[in-house]
Image (cartoon, rainbow, N blue to C red; front, side):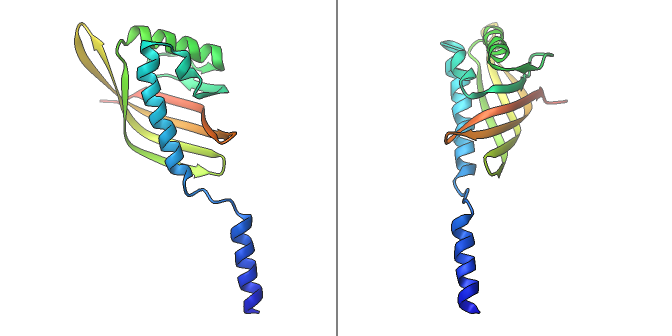
Length: 149
């Protein structure tokens, strides 16, 4: 009886995928997004868009329009990068949950940009839903809104 229980336990451990590193991989994908926002806004917004799934959805901080798909998301970042020069973003206290090949990251971040030669901070809250595709986490859904007073 003990042998059967141990064998069943061993088989269940082998048969179940282990996602121990997925939370760190999601955090790394989020860091890549923040680094790419800063880099992409100075060179090529398409670098940012490449981090989104082809059917991804974005409800951005500075737009009243929801964007679905590569072209609308590209349009958002082209305009955002023009409106917010020297844009950067810093995540604070992310809350990551992983459910197989889907992950959700909620929290707040601060956008910084330059206006009239001075740094301006824009605190916002966010929700990212990511999906793992070919071993890479892509953004499937991204909602961001300014932090209420």
